[in-house]
Length: 252
Ligand SMILES: [Zn+2]
Ligand SMILES: [Zn+2]
Image 1 (cartoon, rainbow, N blue to C red):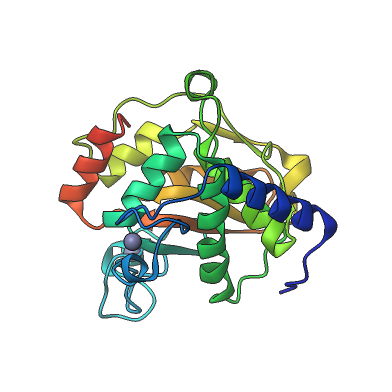
Image 2 (image 1 turned 120 degrees about the vertical axis):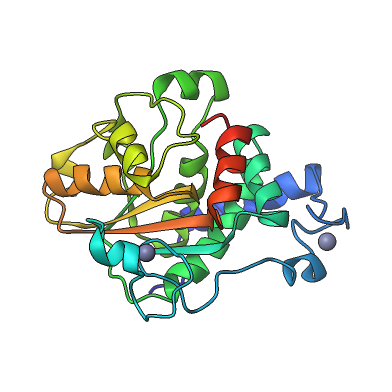
């Protein structure tokens, strides 16, 4: 994968340096000045272990696929997440989502790039999971775009934020099992065939909970003619208890 910086990346870097100079970062964990996450706090991040299912990220003793994904194979070809949705990563996502902190998106995109480079996926186009118009109006931006766009820039992969559109807001996912969640998000998205036809697509999101959203995005992209879908999220919710915690605290 190419690592040379192109002119737009250099401008981006300069802009970020200016932002850092005007608003110096402080460690999200301990407040130490000058860094987004200091070395000590970074070492405490709960990254996903090696033995996880390639489709849902759950710990599994069987290499490749857990029993659940064995019986209901997702339509996407693979999934990776950087870390569990806890501690400093949870704080970083809250900042990305609710505090309109642009520079944190660039920092987190570097982590996603590292994760992506551990795979052998050959991606043609990067697409963020979209949010509905209502949410975009109230929040002002889509947090998944704040990760996907700098990731595309860092990896020099084509970026297509309009390839997926959310056409329906979904009801609360709290208390629903995986199949009910899948039914809840079914037909919530529509893909633009001209942007994805015959392409291998990487769908990017901030948090992966049950996988229902990724599955809905993936099946719609495949329906529109995409060749293969991979999913990448910054964080993965660890278990059923923290899933409920995540869904309630994020009003999903
Ligand atoms: Zn720290
Ligand atoms: Zn699985």
